[in-house]
Image (cartoon, rainbow, N blue to C red):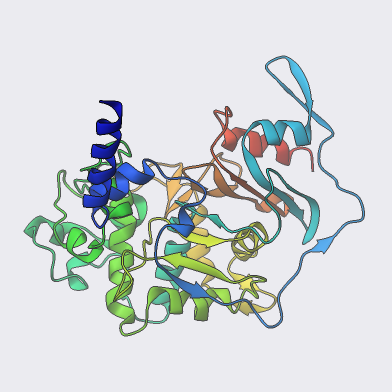
Length: 367
């Protein structure tokens, strides 16, 4: 009987091997090795990579207290399922450490850190005139949207997660929106079918559907270029990325980038995204992205249903000017302009840490 059940499950998996449900059952939940599961488009490293200055001696805290126990900083990070941690101040790499067989050259999926990167690309597309304004209705660029109510949704609403679209962020429902977007192979079709559940511009509701619609706008206005080639041209090459990388797509032939997630690269190159915004969009004298866009994305503001702690696909952890890009398994790019400080934390999960935002702001006081 047990053998029969095992055989039945195996046949079921094979039967669904080419569809969303089969992949959901087989993979079960997003993990740190997901960059190996999906087709992707490649990003190439710079011929002249930018490198942070490395100090002779690590300058991280010696120990931390957790649950009444003192742990070395390394033991603490390791206990929280961390695979990479960087601390950079004034372009100096003060602390760099890797855990669980990960190293400088290990790819780690960005998960929702990619949302912040998508926001940067939207900003560049606006400054280049490919998109007119954040006030444009999205149907100006996406006439295929089937719900007429979507004509009320502005690009601004997508950026601030106030679009009112009907999208479930649940990762445990194999038939839900998150599964369809993450494991499915028809992103363009899925996006076109999206509907408004609430009046746009009235309420904040975090959903990956917003960012994928931003990706679809980029997909349209950049054609026949891909979003990945635009990223290469506008960010990866100018930021002198040290390593090759990739962006996962929904299918091999004519695939679309999963712009709500799934940029795959190394810790040091994630830090360069933070450095760009730390320097208000300027990279060694070249203005890559308009300074006003960076200020708009990282300031505290509540407008049209938005919340003070989220702006233009970036999180605002405190009211002290810092900001962060955040992915579901504890991937973080934290930036504190007042301290000229960047921290990158990548992990297999969030660990038991309930408040990494608070941890980063407290850590920044050490420097």
